Image (cartoon, rainbow, N blue to C red; front, side, top):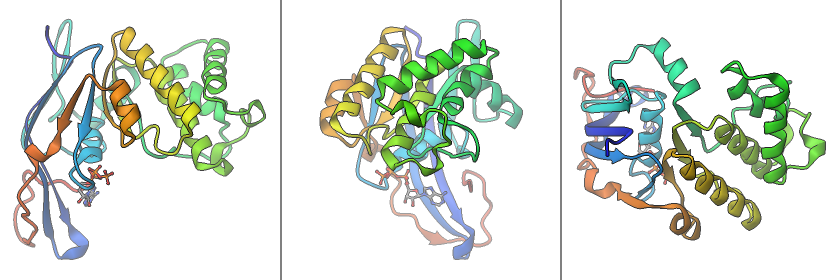
Length: 248
Ligand SMILES: Nc1ncnc2c1ncn2[C@@H]1O[C@H](COP(=O)(O)OP(=O)(O)OP(=O)(O)O)[C@@H](O)[C@H]1O
């Protein structure tokens, strides 16, 4: 079966301009395949590059050397050289992302934050609103909060808005950066259900889960990143070319 995503020989480093151009190499020669209806969980110690990999795949960080390809029925798309404007439609239609923290926009209600990915695709506003409310109710967000901007919500409440927003779009590829980190057991169980439902409709997921119980319940495979860890290469290279090294 053709994978939905392949990564081959990916390197990633950062140039710390505030530190005299210190080069921090994070990963090297990382390769993976991700198939539809599969949840691959990134494993490895803190700081090894799990979130960095998700940010590269979502286009937040530039990739270094290597190849990242998405496979569609009618062809393959290489993400390495994708122009900035193409990321917009890719995020709208193909790649969903539940980040660690909700990006709060003043005056935009929780309901609207969740509806937005559907509206961006031209969905009917009423239908989008009903689906947003269904997800917020499943995630036990009190109804009195639905019409309020999430800026003043607790960490767990904001994260549940974030999760509802990430899952509502039913993207074929979903990146999950510790979606259960600030949730209680009941809401962790809802997230596990949402992941199983996404799998059942064929979504491919790449995720980070520190909670072992959640990890065991959702992971089809683990990818330990130790195998792709760069040797400690931190060295001052103020005048070195930036090829293969990206800053955010
Ligand atoms: N924008 C950035 N600029 C410079 N260094 C960065 C940047 N983003 C990440 N790093 C560095 O890259 C390394 C990997 O970070 P990352 O957040 O991917 O780790 P992680 O495996 O997700 O860790 P954790 O489990 O603690 O969340 C760290 O050393 C971090 O300091």
